[in-house]
Length: 531
Figure (tube, rainbow, N blue to C red):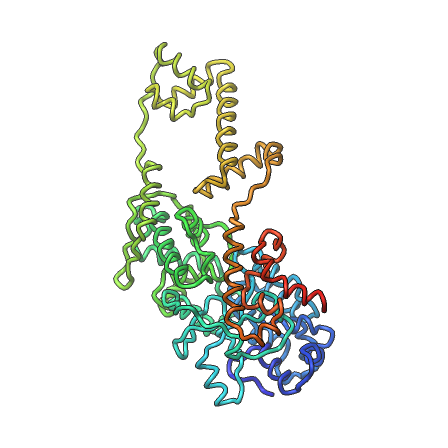
């Protein structure tokens, strides 16, 4: 059978399995991929393409053509170097793709490496009428795509292969195994459209070079008035606040964007990665977040992209926090106003960091009264800033005092270390009640470096509310089973429950901590043990 328009490799293999009528999926996989049958059944980044080319007689194309045009490797190629793409194709040609997602950087990106199958209900109806089949469209499978661009309808997600259930099966989209979208992700429509339009262009391997993308982002921020005209430095805080507001909008529409920054600090780090001179390797979705955040559409991005040739050196960003309300747009954009909680966070940061610090008093001799008080406070480990403010002398005078008094500097450092140690220990011991997770994380890092022995002696504490989790899972199981007929309940199996409730599979290892859930699953676990 020939390819259908925009069809994936997994889809055409599933159609052949349906036509052949083989008893099991493994039989069809063996015919198509030989000894690479397991790797060949992967729906996103399959292996065994070299063997497939030989067995198909080349009528589907070469293994390279299949890899870069009929699998999700086509989504990643523009953002990866030619060397990494060649290594990926070599792995997909062979019998195993065990480390492919690691080599592509998906497992270390901080984002999930799974690619759930998606379909459009209207496309399914039209395909069935026109071709006699429903099939998987490649453009629907791209990460971040939530809408069918042809019909403007939200895509539905398949529960099969989503969490390991049925991962070696061949199947085509059907209403039975597709989960309806709970709500239309309208806030993410711009993101989805941009991904589809960007992927529709014939990019070469590595053409969306990260270094050039950073220059484009910086140029766009300059157009938006987020770069100081005097010294060309980025107003990082305003940019981060705008990105935080956009990420907040995306997360409200879909769990797909759970990885986007949730705090002003996280947004600052994200903006720095997008425009700074640091890391070059990142998940394509992070670059796409930058494009969709800064540009109205793909044409807008492409225009600026093509106008910038080559790379340029970029100065380090100045981490300033001026008065944050919104980033003023150019004449065609729209201002991104900050949510109330983001605005308050920005104001808190602004209050904590002085933007125009006043110079301390000029260098002068310490009078005896002030000197005695300063020495006492320094010996107790107080910071130079606190002593300077409390005693009324400059920091420069205090540094001179530390150098001129034998043993004072060592005593100040030791006392300061003890004070900081006590603070971090206290923060770590109260971590379950702490609302500032960033402070808890910082305390752990500091203790791991300076007080690892004490840290290792502390009992592990879990921040998970197991009782609430147990009630939630038990409720979902009751709701699912309660909606089945008596006949369906008799045929119900544990794997089908895990398929309908994806998070349940991840909790099976800790089922002893979920008594209500375990009680409801007991009949189906016993049935599995008998078999």
